[in-house]
Image (cartoon, rainbow, N blue to C red; front, side, top):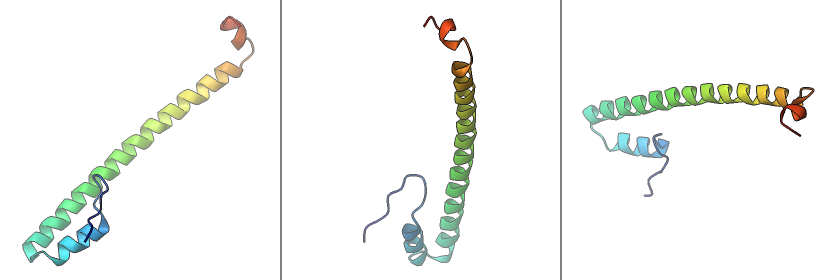
Length: 77
C-alpha cells in the first residue's frame, strides 16, 4: 500500500492504517501525536496569516503613496 506524503500534516489514510494495526497503548500514542501535529500546523497557519495581513497593509500603503499627486515628481520622473 502506498503511504501518503504531505509534510508535517498526517495523511488520514496513514492515521487509519496506523490505528488499525496498533495496540491500545499505541493507539493513544498515535492520537496524541496526531493532535500535536495538528496543533502545530494550526499555530503555524495563524502566524502565516498574520504575516500576510502585515504584507497586505504595506502593499496598500505603497499603492496609495504611488497614486498620490506628485509621487512621480518625488521619484524624479
